[in-house]
Image (cartoon, rainbow, N blue to C red; front, side, top):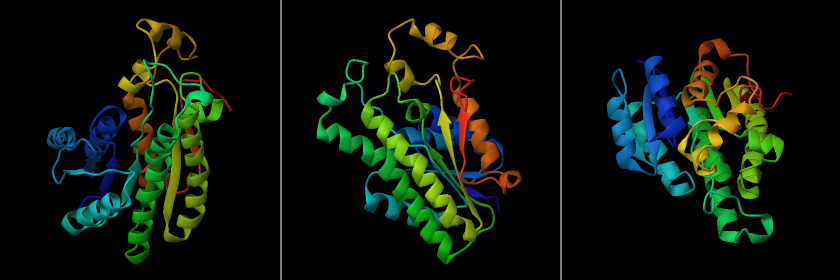
Length: 251
């Protein structure tokens, strides 16, 4: 039986493209999202068989634990976890300065982006500690904004994605004895609904001009990196943050 991948935030954008790529690679995909109807549509559209959709709120401990258990009960052990779910709260397309960010907005952003990654990874690591599986993989999502301090992203978003950078390294060390690799992806300017909400009409061309490769990234660019990192060929890669940004930030 093919490996099973659980993708959070899989109902649209980058998450949906990741689901399509992993299905194309021959994995069975559990598409999870708080928008369950959209998740169903994505799962139904995937090539191959054995795919499913699930409603899951990554910020809620009970939802994560119950959904993870239900997926494993029905489809077998999860071999690949892709923690893609995330939010960026904007106000009329703009970031608020720190002095104006409410505690509710701050906490909501941390709950989805950093707590959600922790809860999903914890469920995965607990399961694989009890029932080890070869070629276990965790993929986390930070952001170029966390590395640069951001231009359009809020301080709450930047802080949440910075937390993921550190958590990825901590998890990589702890997961290594289980044979599980943990790697992060830091997307740059990717052409998604979230990015376009932060730009006025026509700003896309200006943004692309700031990218050395001369274009905005596509969800498929991110999915290609996920495809490599979850493959058996990436078995000696762990604890990394992989920049997929067209040269927008160079180390």
